[in-house]
Image (cartoon, rainbow, N blue to C red; front, side, top):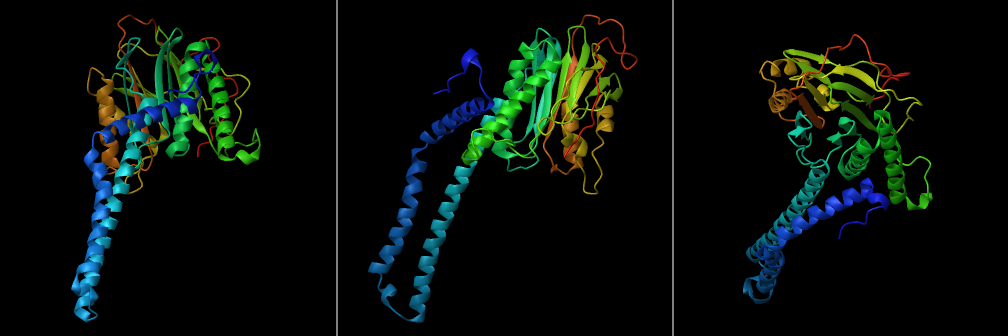
Length: 386
């Protein structure tokens, strides 16, 4: 039964995560219900092994003898029985572990849902790569939605892994999907995300430490989220707010340029946002050009000799294939990253590519030479990344 919605249809990240986990668990239970033979074997095999050992002990004359040969034979029988039980228990535990991973993977797929290939005239491609092959949940997040204010995109990275990180991802994505439509300014979206994260951390701390009181002062120590908010308007104008996250790259023809216009603000969580939040103007995204967003796992990936992944060089190689396709860029970067790290990156990686597929002309070009009124950042702060 789905969790009741809050007044106005609003849901917290915890409720959204719980609903996703319940849906995934129902799918796994339906699959298990179709395999009654496996359930019978789960109970029958240990019983058969135990009956074999008991029958040998009670009915076999060799079990009553005290000679060396008889003892060796008895020991071999019980060793085989014990080994069979251990192997069966191990297989059962591995089956349950795989089932739990499928639940976690399905829950993350519901939260980090696949993006449509086209959003308001923009061609979109996104993907993620888990550093741990055994892990199915991570802290990377991304989303893109079409609103009356333009296409708004979030790319973020939650500190940590596992269910705690997944719950934070759910809270941030739930807050963004609501605020992106409600807030007319990009700064208002970021303010909402800050409040959403703070509320989520308080609820999480209260659930983990109920004896601490109704409102812990320091809910979860050292918990933070790096975020990049991007707004692409109908005329191609691009604005952004950055909280400790890597700046995006512009892919224009065969040229690759990182759009770093100011120092980012600190990540959400440990420090409050400044009083004034003015989006940074990143120019215009012309038809055929693309924005490449990524988490720091792409830039910080190292090979066996400790060399960093040459992301700008890989992007420059990817844009040689014209016309520019977001799927091609994504494939080439992921392929080069896996080759660089020999298939074992040290951190999770999330990539998002948006190509302007609109056919209408977008006016004059003004990237990097001047900002429209009100687009300059006020009091930019240095980033603190951990």
